[in-house]
Length: 331
Ligand SMILES: [Mn+2]
Image (cartoon, rainbow, N blue to C red; front, side):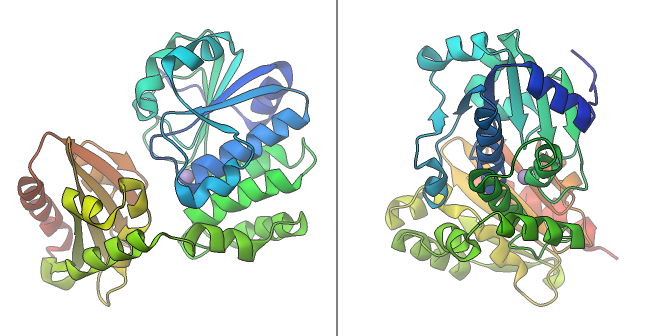
């Protein structure tokens, strides 16, 4: 498969109707949009009498575990799940467009004869699926799913909760650039369906472990102003996780603190991992960081992107990063 075949929302709705045994999956380190989208789609399909397995390569982070109260999300294990993936008649991949981002599951997804469809809002889709519904202007995959599902399935509280989680988290709680009037109208429909917005926010952002707050303190203490005050760097060393009793999933969202400095247009969080350095890029909305992420082998969106540099030393990556950042603010 070497081309991207676009599918319309109507075509996807027809495929969802015609198939019976579904596997849903999403990217490594799943976030609120990834898991909320899976949650909403799984409940819509189950409500329509379909068999649905949600299988991800990584576990559900603690702050989103309220979506997993009924054990919906399964962590991929070849022995347990390859038969399910092979026996599915449709695979829906949400919030990613590159098969390598399902990591160890990639071979099973590619080997399955199931119809494989991608629903996503990232740039640079890679050919691996049978069809793609990609809207790069959508604030979240959950926004695309709302359009796909709302006319075809009764909006249950579970569906509305999943979609709200996806939209709330991917818009930075309704503040990022693509939070259009329409996104607020969708949110209104989801609240009318019974979503408790106070509870959802609290569970995701106000119930961190003490270790996470200690980790945040270390990151903030290490903030560096670079590029003449136009950018910041944040860092997490591997020892920071051990010493605060946290894991990499506890660093979700910390990157955004790098933009909270007057005059700063872009920020990068460097996270030291056992196999290299992970980079998270954020921009306030004028300077694109997408090409920068691509130059480190990653990708994402114009103003929010990521990359992982494998097998490289922390200080070397930092030096390369400073060289790559400088031209963005040269004029
Ligand atoms: Mn997303």
